[in-house]
Amino acid sequence: MNINPHKRFLLLLAKTLVAGLTLFLLYQAIWTAPDAFLSWREILLQAVQSPLRYLFALVAVLIPVNWGFEARKWQLLGQKLEPISFLQAYRAVMVGLTLGFITPNRLGDYAGRVLELKSRQRLEAIGAIFIGRFCQLVATVLAGSGGLLYFIFMLGWQSYPEVALSLLVLLLALCAAMLLLLYNARAMVAIVAAVKPLRRLVPYLAVMGTYTSREMTRLLWLSLGRYTVFLGQFILLLILFNVHLSPLQYLSGVSGTFFLKSVVPSVSLLSDLGVRELSAMYLFGLLGQERLQVLSASLSLWLLNIAVPSVVGLIFVLRLRLARKGVAA
Image (cartoon, rainbow, N blue to C red):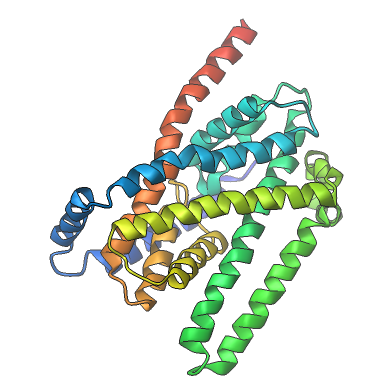
């Protein structure tokens, strides 16, 4: 797709402004506090020396489980295009993760998974990848809406009942709309086909309409399974960094954080790094928790689940490039 220089400049400017605003808000939330760096150093030392430091190892053990759920999802999604083993699906997920790490909204994930396919119609996988990501978004919105209900009822209902009721109705409508779209993927393809500038994308999205309701339900359960692992990892890290809450508050804070991170637009070049941290500090701040402790847990979650696997995925990316060179030769 060709973009004229003027539009390209405006797009780059918009991305720069959003990224700059995110960094500025993070700075305002953290580094304007006195002795912030010394406090953070103390928090990290306490976590390393804590008798609960084994929780860090437990979170690390769950990393392949987290991405295993995603690999199983991709295996089921990709079967519409060509037979894929679980190991092949896992490798494709790792390649996509690595390429998506440095692209806004993980757009490189599409390229990584497409390149791993052998089919001549590999670009048709774009629709399958979109369905997989949409399933994960639906799982996040469903669980996150439940988490935000805690904040609505416990913190806002008595003071602002009209606002709280409006938010409740909005969340219910959002959940219903997303489930309706998920189970009517043909309608999404039809909408794209009805928009003339987007009509050329229909061949790449047509596979979306081939998934049955039973298959969608299976994919949604896998998405919820992955979500549960991710949520558990975050809670374990919060405990490690001395964030003490009730089980309901842990669940509400983390699920609400994931919800806000997913629905807030982001152009971060580091897999949405910044949006989750701001969301976590805001929601857990409402629960009376220290920002640096919450930030430490959130950054550790990003490091373990995104940064480290992305480095490991480089192995598969290099093998992929070598294989393509071998075929070309």
